[in-house]
Length: 93
Image (cartoon, rainbow, N blue to C red; front, top):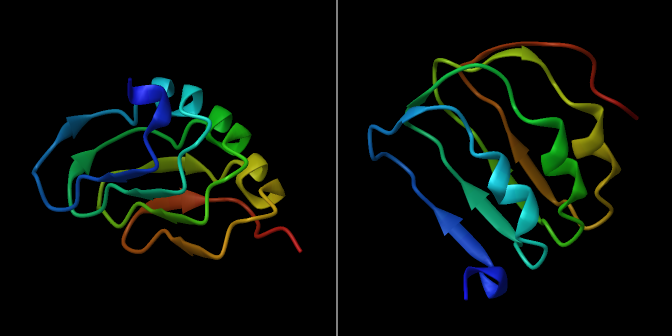
């Protein structure tokens, strides 16, 4: 079952669309790398509910909107990468 999934690496696949909200249902997820794609819109707030997440990378060119503060509440998070996007907001201390 995908509910046991720990890693999603879709780097560089020319994917389009939005970041799927269903990622937030994968509670055992530790690693998300969806960089170098052409996804657009914003980063879903619900991704902050993935408490085991250690790496979140969305290096692409088409994301916009604000950084969801929920991401900064993930205590296991060790690495974030938002390079080359149109995001706004503040980094939370």
